[in-house]
Length: 389
Image (cartoon, rainbow, N blue to C red; front, side, top):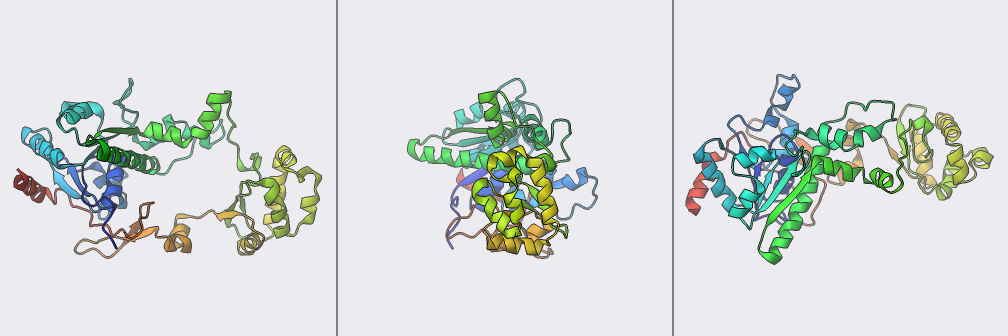
């Protein structure tokens, strides 16, 4: 196996919580030397379970997945000495990743214009809630606020008269983190040609809007949107969720309806459904979508899940299981496809696994380094700086 594709690159991270550390964490997985600069109290994500009212802080997977393989350096950037150390660190770096709010960075002399004036080869990677411009550039975001709520995503998940459900943590952060990484890699390629780095910026809000770009684009072009409906009232009955008789759920994926519809009828051995005048073509199935969903609910309830999926596969009916988290962990395809990675335990820890990053590289297998203790590498990194000077 070869070294990771970012071996030889140094990334300095001044990040908190999830999105910024997630971006730098992927680069650590891919071989970069990532130096995580933390305040004396540490990244608050280290104590995220405490914020949820959980006393035991032993093993914090939300922190571990985004910070494995990094080196932790504690610097109190309120002091001149620490800011000098930070400056020397940036002089050795290829990339600076931060999701600290712009005004706080500028007060520390670490705003992008300030840093780029001193270090023109550096790629300055900025991740904010709402962007570097505009009246709310310093507003706190979190992914629930900026990615989900402000972008329109949360509202679009449910019918207009309903409030969104409680959303899972970190999803918008991880999506925005990998968005930032893609921009960093493009800027590093440009630097190979020009010798000059520069600013790369994204935000939780912009990434959320890009995620919802189909719906927003239709509204921009035509001034309308398709309202989200309950599954019983969906206008896409053949791209919808259903249950088998034993309660297992699945999603039909019959997007090319006229091509796929006869295969579903054959799989169910229900010729009467195929002959029903309400459902003979895509236009009629759309007009009678609620009736078709009711018919399919009744039909699927006569088969077990295992029976259905055998029938689906035999007739090339496209479908997907609606997996629980524990179903995903046990999914043979996820296991075979490298979705999990063996972590490097610290002394006294039992071996454990975690979710792998979403990108593979031929000839390189990720084996993350250990999750750093707060300030574990401060002395070593500062000694390296002394040797370079």
